[in-house]
Length: 122
Image 1 (cartoon, one colour):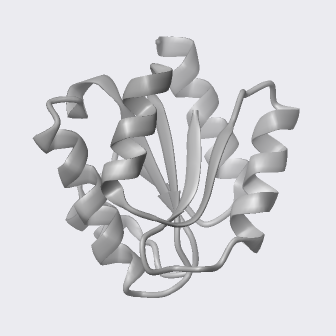
Image 2 (cartoon, one colour; image 1 turned 90 degrees about the vertical axis):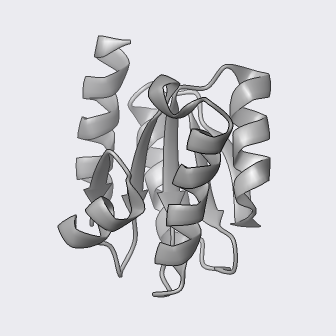
């Protein structure tokens, strides 16, 4: 799976905790780092045949970047091939719907559980 902090956000403490927990749960995590552009995420997903994407952000402007990333997967014709979860301080059910993501989480445990369910269905 891919995990990253979206474009225009430089925060990574929460992302790093989530990555550690996902790896402990058996996931192979490709961590793209911070301030990652939507096009880069799509490109890396395509190159690595990744079907689960975790987007992190702490700033409220991250919501806009999350939406642009989901839209980039749609524009690339890959949206039906990936599941996208968003996480971080500003996320909520409403923002999940606004961005078009498949799920959202406020804590690493929820992220791991959702990703496990998705991986089992792949």
